[in-house]
Length: 412
Ligand SMILES: [Zn+2]
Ligand SMILES: [Zn+2]
Image (cartoon, rainbow, N blue to C red; front, side, top):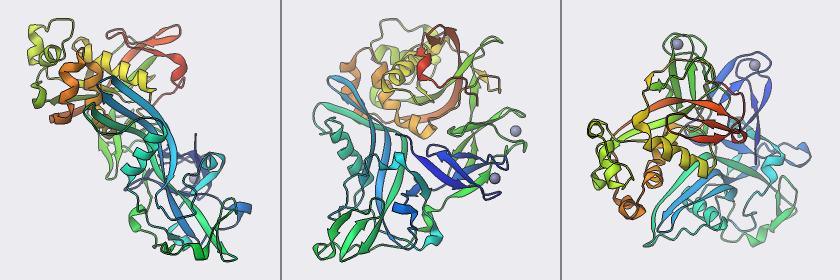
């Protein structure tokens, strides 16, 4: 499902509607471009029935998660795409999930001035996600056969449902349905708290911190680039931070560059320090070359949202073929595809990619719970892809990605 959010432009005040995944707000009225900033997940409220105002009402939190859960088990790597909203407070009478409502409606950000009270979140995000995973039929019992679990979250937010108290009952503010009688709430007082300042969203001008030029990037990108000084900037709670970025140059006509996070690390639990160590420990069907002893091991994680199978396959193939790549300092060239997976998510995918890249699950999987990464450095590397009919193909590593799964013609 795709959720759309109404957002006021900080420059001219006009109301702009954007997908919830967008952090870059481009105002179609005044043309300014601003970065939405927050310290945690975004928080939205559902619109009321009959366009009534929800000001002053009690709001109930629902955790919204859209992303992929991966499990590494003795049987292999399982995955499931989860797209759910689940109540974050167990008070009786509340709908357990918001169902399809959010996608059919335009959400607004919660407004600190609206005088709402907020029912506190009492269920932990992780517990809610596990419940969602169970709904998706993915067993989550930690046991002898489960070696690793990771949530590669594409999006994580809170959606609030307004409640209306009337006629001795509690009503769903969106559908007006009666949820529960007031006298049945014994022991569960619906007591809200005031707006927490930590939820506030603020804006940041998208100007290059190094040279002051306007940065470029699609609405849902996680990294913006400066075509003037050829720098790249990632979003974080502290604002824009410089990204160590590189490009493996294609020829002048390269139709597409796709970004990967290159995570270089030592893995003491598996005695992996160099690429040669990795090739040996993971039992690859080829011999390490002598110079691979000096090449630090890196796991390559696609820096874009891809279906789970393709995500694992692309990361695996670049990880195995990394010795053929010769990245140089990053430069803004045509056809750079936007980074949509932030480096923090890539960091969470490292163990998973290690599992995906091994030729011998038995030698790697059982050690995953003990694996700790040390000496981690991250770089963003763009790789050239060529047009092969139905697929985009990376010539050095052989990665093939169906054209139908990448949104066409996007540039950073
Ligand atoms: Zn504007
Ligand atoms: Zn610049």
